[in-house]
Length: 160
Image 1 (cartoon, rainbow, N blue to C red):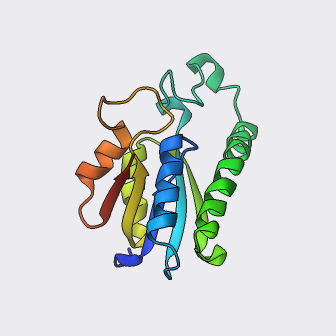
Image 2 (cartoon, rainbow, N blue to C red):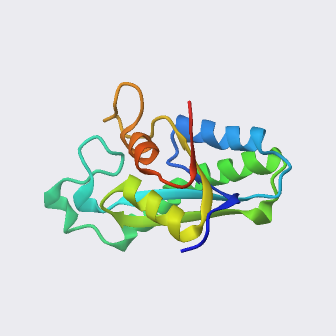
């Protein structure tokens, strides 16, 4: 566990317009600062996905899926990650201080985000108000709502 560092920012990305708005906000508000920005994506374990999630697979098909599926998901994310990096660099962030982490097999997106924040010593979590899942609260997405209420040490920015 690392000590929380205000110069380490985790921006949660999932390809949604809300996540990209969060990336743009970080780019605009923190431009030309010496920060380490990690674009972070959590993918649920296949058994945890629910109908309506972008990568949901019916139970009867799960056993047919292998590592090629995971590679496809990573390839699907690549354009969004490249766009996010481009937004940050165009705002004045150093390309060598922008990284991407992809966690798979999570049983809880919010729990995984908070575990990684603690392990990685992030001082700030930045998230969009809602993600790709259409199963969301009226005001705020489930993951951002859980992170906001469960986070103890880092600052949490929810961007609309």
